[in-house]
Length: 227
Image (tube, rainbow, N blue to C red; front, side):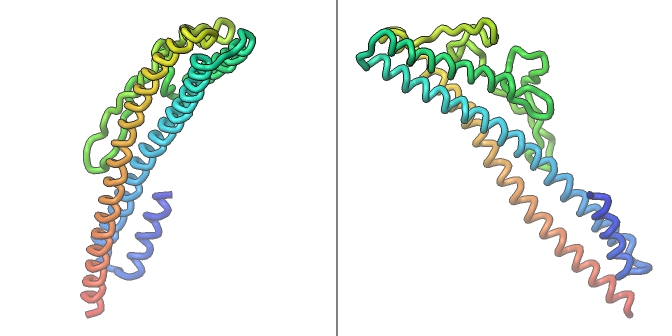
């Protein structure tokens, strides 16, 4: 796409400036390329952060739902059969956290599954097109932090349950810790969102400024040729 735009820019310049157009056309091509590369890199970083935030948001909602179930079990008066039904829902939601951890990926790299061999630990993000990329440490959402021992589909195990008021209260404590971890990780993402927004706004202002300079230069060269 950039190649097509560059060809169009050169053709447009050549139609205006026959002899003196080489410098200005090269300048225009350079500006177009810089703009395309800059916004592509920033857009990729934004896409990564959006996907990561979506996964963390869903996990947060699951933990909050489980916390509600635990509170119901801890403070409600239930028969054993009813508590078992609450625990069944509780365990299924924990399994959903496992599924999200295992399926979350970006460009074929796993994002949340710290046990997977392809987990990169850090992601390189180009936040500012005029400076080096930064290394963003991925969230280390280890299973034990969510009260899970094993995510195996054949042998799922967790350290939490809501079968009794005592175990439900203990599970609430674990989930409060989980929510604090998720909140911290989502705050880190929010900070990068702010940096991305600022970088994009600055890039738009710079491109507008470059465009004005290029237009002024083209006008001057056109006037010189006409004389």
